[in-house]
Length: 407
Image (tube, rainbow, N blue to C red; front, side):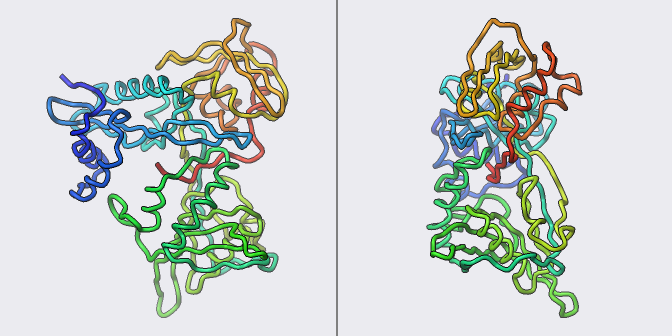
């Protein structure tokens, strides 16, 4: 009989090796040791067939920025695998159920994850809360409309980037809905202080720091270059891993640097927001092509009242929501009362304006997903006229939420 439970302190190594197998790489002894050191067994679940670990799931706490430039505690779900020999036996369902119970006991109002397969997590109450795109820029034909802004962009060593980038990112993420915290280990791996797990990224890595005209740091970029030549003609590719800008000038200057690096014909940026100003900076916006667009962060409301009270809304209104949570039974009827700078959500027995699934509420929570498509698909029931439109006026934000941190 297969058992699902939290792991013991002595099962840390076994967890990492089972997780690595699930993601199709073999863990070295050094990788296993480094990973095991940072595990919290109380937030790490395994599925056991006898002594063999055949399923894995882990949670770590983070901060999530929500509309209104506010942060809330969030449970980040990661390292989820089930061995190919034990699929379709309910192991993932039981791990998700136990994790949600633990998350609720810790008063974390939302859970977040990045889904390897989009068909899996809706049944557990998760909805797509942020998207990201892959941009490809024709660097040869890209010309900027305006001259470079005042200030400077300078190359920085990995040590300098490690010292500088965290504070810059932290300023951005506290204002960007959908952004999460990055711990010390994240930065150590990013800048090569400790090696990453699995297959290393290709290409030589570079970092640049941007300073404004007064010398204050207001952005950075990190990228890799794969050099190539076509009959002595440059054909290099710049892979942009991260670009963080605190001002419009920094944004312009950092993109200009990446596009104008010598011997580069193409810039690829894998994890960008669905809408950004780059095409408007260029004479020919068609040189910026959106090659892919996909879901990134999935969000699950665990405590409806706490989550909805924590963010701000665009207008003042009063809306009663009947939230259906078939998997975890943390739904119910709630009244949401908002002003433009505060909100209160609490259980109520008043008649509902809307009935919706907890997954659709999670998708809309950060302000980037309208509810009307779900209503058009029959997943939302409006009980009062205009209730779906009122919901969207409340929840949608001027700029889409964006998470550009993989976890």
